[in-house]
Image 1 (cartoon, helix red, strand yellow):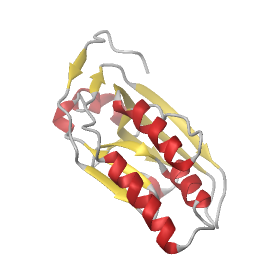
Image 2 (cartoon, rainbow, N blue to C red):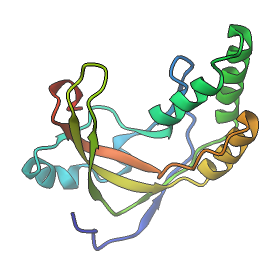
Image 3 (cartoon, rainbow, N blue to C red):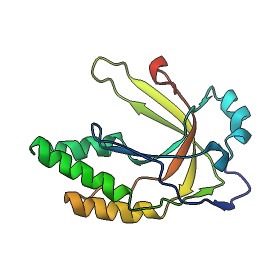
Image 4 (tube, rainbow, N blue to C red):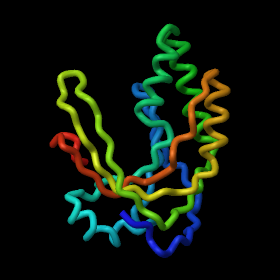
Length: 170
């Protein structure tokens, strides 16, 4: 997919519409689709066989990092584990999470190997990068809290997606 000609950045107000899952140790920032240009890509997405997401968010702590967090806490008592997970959630709420939409879009593809009785899967998506300055500071404090060295994830919004597995298309 080609980069769009207009690379201007739209400033967005901060938001605190966060969803933290203690069971998965994941953190999502829900966002409004009116804040970015999802409709301008519908034709291209249709040509590529991708469907528009029904809900939009920015992943702050994703599945893989969440699994590593839970593994790190595995030996702790339920009370200690809950205390640390609550501290992560409190930490996330210390930020206002302002973001800027970068007017570029990328078509990406990722293959997932067979696992737990599931066939191999290939997912394809159109993503829009964003600037999310609080993410760097959040990960520095998260790493300090946990004694880890997690990389700061690439901040983006997934706009359209598909999968070779029917249950994972959206």
